[in-house]
Length: 294
Image 1 (tube, rainbow, N blue to C red):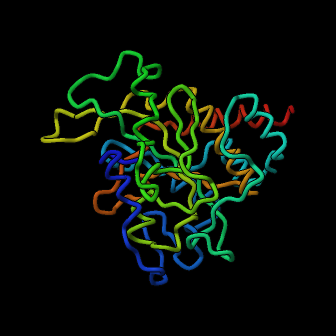
Image 2 (image 1 turned 135 degrees about the vertical axis):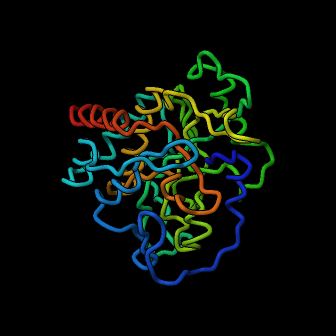
Image 3 (image 1 turned 60 degrees about the horizontal axis):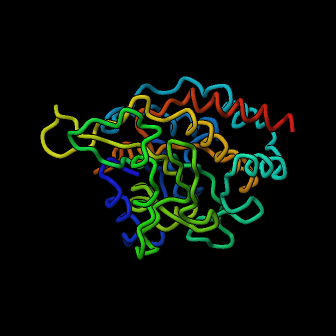
């Protein structure tokens, strides 16, 4: 989601956009509005899109290289595990993303000839919001933190909620928000810059991470996120979701961060905060070894 909170993120969906934008490269990672792709090879795109994010969306140092696991799948092009093998692991872990045999979304709001989804976008929910109160002592196990109910409000407009395809709490529980086949947008780059052609090109995953106010910043803000930003269970599950979504798409998706995609735009989002790419990569390598043994 965003540092502005759940409500503002939900408001992303109804923004009216033109059906096309002028040809060119847009955004920090140079999205090509004709090719519907960021600049460079898949590995080079991931290097840009997974660049570290600091407080309030400040970008960290450029990645000199991808960590080993992502380099193997995106640069060397290692084969995807079969859907049957991934399905068995999903079943053994009690994770349901709607199956792997169905389609994934297509760009341009599902146009039949448009490219299939190419990107796996990582968000954090930026909620629940604790204001000036401290985070719970056990933030990973806290019932309020891990409650999915705020993201699935009863009677909500289905064009606004849930705001992502998949939700992942700190205990590793996964819940489907939107079917992976449904074209969806959840970043300002998609809605305010690229427009309709982007709708369906990105699969969105919200990882639960609370926020609180930074007292050194005047007025309301949600600048402080937990440290560590995510639980080990979240990294493990996120790696599984990445592999499963890629298997369903029929090719390795390119990982991206919400805040990196939106960088430089007005009211740019700053999530996921305190995301450790090396920990995600270690979880991915461990999972790939497990899948090879099956």
